[in-house]
Length: 157
Image (tube, rainbow, N blue to C red; front, side):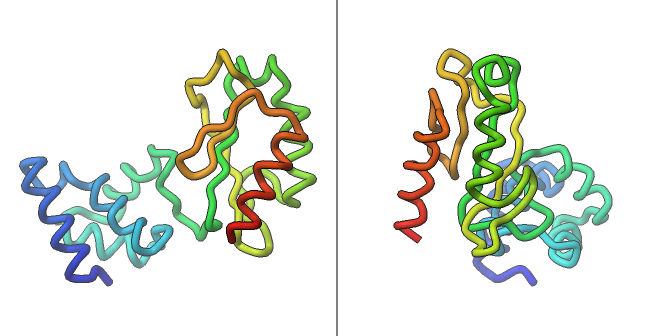
């Protein structure tokens, strides 16, 4: 169920966009910030509030990488799978990350700390391979550098 604070923020976005449907991404992001992900039930609440069908809203949501339709970990590890990252060692790094975290792409660690997802490009081709954890970009990655980065997140958990 949408809280009053969520409704207020979504209404502000609707006003800024000029119509309710135009604010659908912002509405989903607002709700996701609160819930962490968007369940089918919550998609229905948001759609109803915006005057859209759940299918219309899901069609928009499924287009975007950062809309999560199932529970995710505390930290999102976005793994760049662009051509540059492939050339610079993506496969070796991904194999290491998979072993280190114990999950594949789309998976969440058993402790709920990390979810690893692919992303088309992080715009760091000159410093490939690259990942982004939450909003922080890490470049020129090696398995050893990845291990040090992950440990810092584990220590801060």
